[in-house]
Structures are given as structure tokens and as C-alpha cells.
Image (cartoon, rainbow, N blue to C red):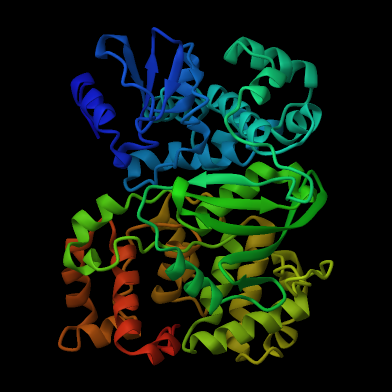
Length: 497
């Protein structure tokens, strides 16, 4: 990151995409704030103020640019302990935690004091959690006005405003425009009859290897729950909000011309739209910084700089996938997951994509017996691990979302019988999107370093920190390229305790 105003301004003049989403520039002569990649004429340095987040720029009295649209900027993945609490809090806020909760309850959820949360949050984002939440709601509303033909009332409700009047007043106060004027002045079209009602962009820092992402997700797609069709990923979604189940379907396509993905959620998902967008960002690893990763990985990543770290839709789903991928091929694990969804997943309306199920909830597996779970074709020990995982997740004894202390989380996972170092590390890497995990006992890794012990492999991999998870994916990718059948490799050759 730049360290002074001169460096920030140099990055702005270069329109360097490495810094997109890492800082914002407020232009005092216009009262507008922009992303550092904005295509407008570069302002004079003396007119520029630099901010660590969009919320901080809005707190400074600036309104968002209608051309570069700050709401489309990618986020920043945490790579050190100092940012974990602030980043986890921001992710929960983006998912709507403060719509009904308070800053105090958010701090308790993260296991810290309210005062400490405010301190670390201000250091990272330059504003308070409440200010960040207000800015996120406004930016989502701005996005919906620009990219949908929803009514202003529907936009206000979907963005988390309990009152249309409050929404109108806040837009006028912050943006000095009414919602209708904001929609009219938007440079984006609102859709036309016959097109999806919602088509929202999620930006990323290029390059992004969309084909590799689709291939990875496609060969692991759970039957009836998700599918890769042509150049698109389609998925059934189900969330519980305020004791009410919200269900729908989402379709994701690439929009390389705008360095974005196009997300098309069904209208039924409007009540949980912030949560849907956050989960899609995590699933496709859109907050990654390929330049930073490649700078550390060197030749290992040189041939495929756009390779991403696929996430999981939920922490529980990611954990279940990890358990069922132990010691079996990718095809066999996918078959087991499909059986699990068919047996324990809630039915969903049949769609043209052939989807008719939701991924099983923790509560459903917690109610099942070990024999019922094992009946999908797994050993009783693995069925016991799944049920134990489901019970602890359903009761809140095990946190699988917004995990802050990754090392502690891995230790908790390893206390569950049937979950060892490989499975716990895989959960941290995919379910929690932690970028610095390395599975030294992995089958492909041990083939790549046949003369080294797991400890020696671990020591060798430290050169790739803090991006060892990406190093692992590159090792898997090069192994698959050299021998296509290795995509059906055993996931964990060592039996876990």
C-alpha cells in the first residue's frame, strides 16, 4: 500500500488496478469520491483526499462517482492477525448483521469488547461500524437503482432500510440527489422486458481464470443443488432470516470486459440480497489480489496468474464437503454429496437447470442417526464425524462463519473424531477462505516432493507465506495438467484420527 499522499496520487495517475478497492480518492473541487481506476480526468493533487474505505469517504462528505461506481470495487482479503477482527466485522455488517443487531452484539459475536471493535475497525476502515453499515446500505441501494428495475420501495427494503422516508432522506443528505434522480443519472441501463429483473456486477482485480473456476466447481457440483451450464454457474440458495426461510436460485456469469461477474438472483432472494452477494464474492474469491499472490509464488504461479481459491457457500457446507472428500476421488466425493443432499436436503421448486434440492442444513443432519447418514455409502466413523459436526454447528458450539482466530478454529475442528489436520486445514482454506494454509500430507503434494517428509515439505512451503493456500491450488493445477486423471486423486492418503 502507498505510505503517503504522493504515493497515493501516483497510483491514482497510473490507474493501477492493484489498488482498486484498497483506497478511494475524494475530490474536493467536485465533492465526489472515486476508485483509483476511474477513467475521468485526473484531478490536481491539492484537491485530493485519500480514504481507506468508501464509508470513510462518505463520512468525509463526499458522494460516490456515477462513472466508476465505488460500490463495484473488490474487497481486501485479510492476511494478518491485526485485520482479522475488523474484516470479520465488516463481512458480517455487509451480510446485514446490524440491520437488527447492535455494535455491542457484533462485538460479543466476535468475542471482543465493543470498545476494542470500534478501535480496530476505525484503524482499518477509517469509520465506525455503524457508519460502515450505513454506507454499505446506501451503496447497495445505489447499485439496485442502477442495475435493476425494482421500485424505490423495493430498493429501500432490499438494502435494509426499514422506512422509505428514512431512505429518501438519507440519500438526499449523503448524495445530494433523490433516489429517482440517482436512477435517472445512472450510466447503467435498468433492464428491459424479458430480461432478468436483477443483474448485479461484482468486481474483481484481474486476471481471473473463469474457465478454471467453472471446471473446479463443475466437477464437484452437488446433483440437484448446483450445476455448471455452458459458461454459467447455477445454484439453489436457502437462508433463514428472522425465523423465516428465504429460498431462490442464483446464476453467475463472467463479464470480462468490466472485470466483473454478473450475478442474477431470483426476486425471492431480495430479503437476503446482501448475504447472497457476500457469499458469491467468497465462493469465487473476488477479493483476491493476483499481483500480490504471484509476486510471492513466483514461477509456481507464472503460467496461471488468474487462478483463484474457490470458497464455499457456507462454513457448514464447506466442512461437510471436506469430510466427504477424505480418502476418495473427486467423482466419488461428489456422488456422496449428491446422495446426502437427496436424502437430507429440503426440496426446492424444479428449475430448467435440473435443480430441485437445497444443500442439507446442520439441523437436518443433527436430527439424523449415524446409521441414516452412513447409509449414503460411508463408514460409520465418517457418519459420526458428520453428525458431530452438525450437532456442534446447529447448537452454536462450533463457529463456522466469520472465523477470526483461525488457529483456534482448526484446533476445535481437530477435536471432533474423524477430523484430522488435512480436513481441518481444508476447511480453513475453503470454508473460511484463509489464504495461508498448506496441506503437507496431501497426496499430490507428497507426489510433488517424494524425497521430503511432511515436516520438510511444510518448511519448504514457508517461502510461499502468506499465500500458501494459493500455492497448494497451483500445485494441484499443475498436477492435473500433467496427468488429467489426477483430478480423481485420493484427497487424503493418510487415515485421519
